[in-house]
Length: 158
Image (cartoon, rainbow, N blue to C red; front, side, top):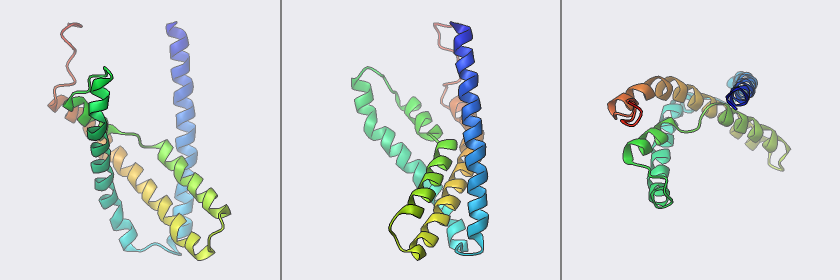
């Protein structure tokens, strides 16, 4: 049972790594391609603003859904909700969705000028958000768990 679980953990890790590497390289290529055409300093300055808005919205989502989670027996206390909202989904999924938007909008019946204004920004902002979430949230989540007292083993395990 344990060896099968370990096997699937390795497979999931490899698939996530391949998706992250592939989507990251493609997003960087799209950013480089769009840099000469349509980016401004405003677009780059929006990345930290969007990062803050994203974290606030994620926290509001957890806050709104926490009563439902408590009533269904999940028992989400505020410390766990804070960690869930702070650590949220990021990485390969975000980059793959940016790539999907790129290819879907390319085939959509929209004016080409609109395509040139929207798609490069999606790539830049999603890549920037992934980078900030990995660098900021990824490096500080252990400290947050320690401050909230979630890094200690439960009394039943001691």
